[in-house]
Image (tube, rainbow over all chains, first blue to last red; front, side):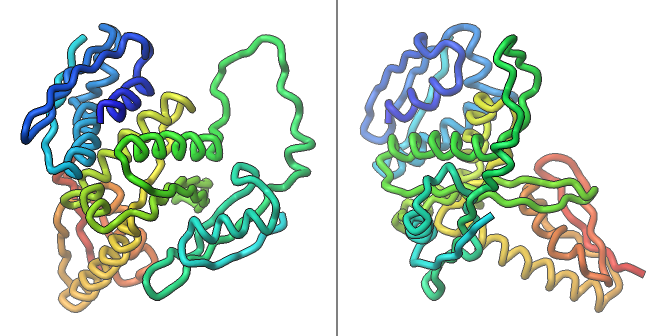
Length: 76
Length: 236
């Protein structure tokens, strides 16, 4: 699932090499801490957080298949 | 423009057979889905090779000075890009699926040509289809928004790609058309306007289109954002 997040974010940003993801696996939820270049934060979040919501929903599909929930934190 | 029509159990299968018969690659042809396959009916696909004369006589791009002034929108390229990215996403979800691209053109309200790109996702089990569509199609809408955002970054224009999973769009379209006809019937019988529940843009468009030819009623949307809804009025 980490690969899924990295794939999407790299397609989205101007500086793909700056993309970092930390994953924390819980019993019921997986938390991803995403870090992107300062100039790319807006691209990952989108207007009114629409892009971030879409990324969370898409990660949610992969998580639901493992009966888990997913959290995504975005830093830059 | 030579073309063949082929039916098979799935769109993917029909497309593969057609390409094999014609001995061409997917990116050299226009693939139109004439009928979605379901439990009772086979999928029907028309594959046409694009006119080779047109490409031969196209003037060569000037090599010098690569000016980036609004390259014309290339739906074929946008469709191929959309498919590549969607396959990349499904692959990393550990979802086994086949993605096919359908291009179609229609005439808009001002007589302009509208191009639409539909990506069909096939071969999923029922549970995965349900998860991917989500409640009231919300997850599918997110996936579609994300895909358009990503393709937009490559082709420089919002490509209006529609994703269909497990024939959801077609089933949704049929149910909305049924609703539109029932409401039109009531409006006709009572002579009073009737408002529908708020709907997404894509769904409203289906309702508008369903009643466009109806001589007894007309439709209008009112409200903003999440509360935007259609009202059906009697035509006097």
